[in-house]
Image 1 (tube, rainbow, N blue to C red):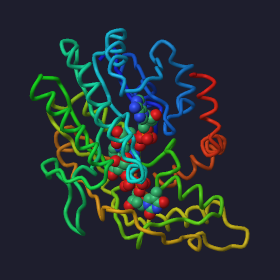
Image 2 (cartoon, rainbow, N blue to C red):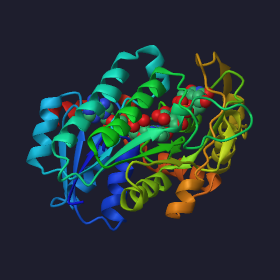
Image 3 (cartoon, rainbow, N blue to C red):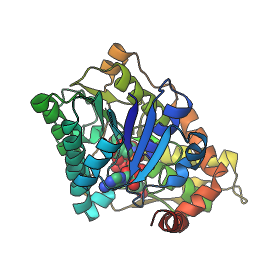
Image 4 (cartoon, rainbow, N blue to C red):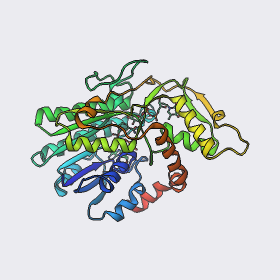
Length: 349
Ligand code: NAD
Ligand code: DAU
């Protein structure tokens, strides 16, 4: 893989992946990071990479919904591999305003597949990043396997399911080499503070209320983002074309438990002046419509075939993540104030 197109590389997982690939992995090629820079894309996440890896890292501001532009980029940069992160990723936004999810997640993925199809003679791999949410919701028992039928419940997960089907269809119909990974909930550095864990960390630090949907008993399977990045690169290097791999953290927890865990760690690291508990900030709010009860991922295929398993425990991962948000207040302030968007407008108009 000499010229890898990474889409959505300025978002949370994409930025961690670019960083991992260049700083820690055995990847020796060049990364072409293509990102539209929506509210969730922040090139400041990779500012040091842009300086330190001038010969191996290129950033392009572009929209995957622009098919003509995608074809030009594949041609110009002689793209031979794709790692496709770009998406609208937040479930609540998909419920409020689904249109953008259909465009980016389905039409955008289709455009990339078309460009890859045209250049399939030099295409080594199209790796598609997907989610465990395509399988729908579990009851209190059981795990999602790669063979679990798709049953998405939100506009977000339905759009991701559609994109997964398109990727597989291009393998079956046109012989495009591809792999898909379906991963559980990620957390870690650079996550946009609309998702549960960074939202709770920042609200708790600021003494604001901590919104928990419904009764807080919904369960997610948490995975530290770097472990996800290692899984993706493992699949890209050693996975079998045409296959899907589930990725999970083996760290199931009810939402209320993870919120309490964050409160307790923060009380220990940064005690409140009156000696009180941040648990008092927890507020149960109206539930998310169609809220999936539980996700749990069986990743035995990935561990047996490709020898991957998560390295970071939930306890240490949450501690490291809290510390990252405490140490990076400037990043937090620029994201929360919207200042990063002003910077984008002046630099990428
Ligand atoms: P994110 O929202 O933080 O980042 C998405 C990135 O895509 C942003 O940089 C954004 O600017 C870019 N983007 C959006 N629309 C675009 C378009 N039309 N053209 C080009 N770029 C565009 O998302 P994330 O949490 O990093 O998720 C990345 C991928 O991983 C998504 O495909 C998501 O479905 C999947 N995923 C996420 C998780 C999770 O827990 N966050 C878990 C499993 C799978
Ligand atoms: O499972 C993988 C998916 O995980 C990814 O595909 C998505 O891109 C990613 O956003 C994430 O989806 P969730 O909806 O599970 O993540 P979120 O952080 O939004 O919510 C986690 C849980 O916490 C969920 O049960 C809803 C709940 N929640 C969320 C928010 C934002 C709250 O209770 N309060 C909140 O304020």
